[in-house]
Length: 557
Image (cartoon, rainbow, N blue to C red; front, side):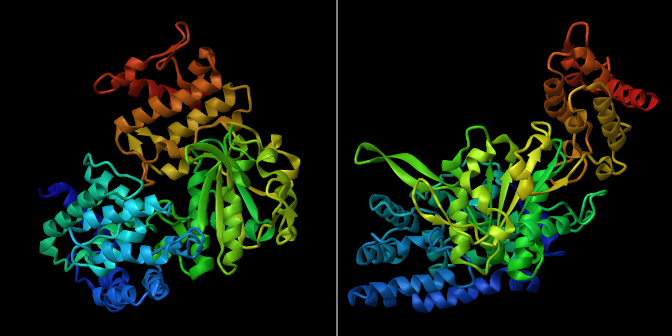
């Protein structure tokens, strides 16, 4: 069944944002950036992984050479993530318990065995599961794709999930490959190739590159990544400031009220700095395989990783600890590395690579308990110094190529309450609400920046407890693409579903204060309630009047 025409037009519009005036798969810019290097690898695979070549290697018992050829094609131009061998997409062929002859026969069956490709993938998946080997989408589909580029598709989980959501179908994605899922995925991509035939796609390499390009540009605002200011007004050269602190201290925390872009800027800074330090390019200029090196994909790990602290997060999650698991019907406890220990191990294995860990909501966790004895070796001049971990007894150190960017919501906890030892080891950058980010945008005659400024002035005037840290950030009034909301229904939804619940939490059953902030048109202090019906009435005329009064009252005070 053909794909929705509107969705196809939207995909073409997306790739035209990445490559202006794109109208053909033979566009030299598209071919150079996304196709050429993959076709080089296809040519190599045609020689090294041909049916006859692999058949001979199996017959001659040359399993090591068979696996070496897989490594060669897997590492070519970095389409698979393998910078950290212990966790990369090729780690399945490095497993100590791998039965090499048996595994080689299964890979041969995957590539050239009887039956359609989804059935062969199903047999491969059942084999690796039965042997307790890593079972990921990337490894089997990559080699199917390289050996059969006319018919097969390379599945990158993050891109695939975006594409399926974009199409709006009811297809359910599974984290591990299955025959049924691959058949559906392959059919969808082949239908896309058919629907785009007027643009001249030659094979599935073109289609995979097309979808990846659409996914990539979908994360940037319309007009390209450079269409807006590089840094939020009032926060000049933010990434430069982050870099300066990281070079000096090794870790930095971005802190401020909710909705001020802390997580956004932590991620943007990490990606940009990783691109510059590892490839000497801006992140937006990197080709597919270099971005993959930084971001990772699915359950693979990249040079930039993220974790989130919360009250239940502990030392065992961050450093190491025992975890329960089933083995032969029995519950056993296995010592496992945490996210930071894995990152540091990978950084030691790749000393020329810069790694970044983003710790979101760092102040929501019990930081001394989570970090433990690592507090003593986080400082820049202590990097490389070893300590003994109490659980495993291993020697552990934080290498100099590891950088930490934390975010802290000051509505949850003031920076003044942070552990003094932690404060001494981190640098800090404050991000506050900035109405100027909203420009002159208006909805139904309401200037968004002016309204937000008025709202925050009222919060500071009437909320007794730490009001400066309880203001409302500008990102509540931005769309996913980073541009100000332009439709009043979007504004009303943000106010009703996000801003008002936050203010209710700040004021906690104090409807008199809430009325002073939002106005009597929205809050009924006598009945102690929000006038929710205003948000359901067609036209929103009463709501608009109430919002205008909120803004005017603030300026009159």
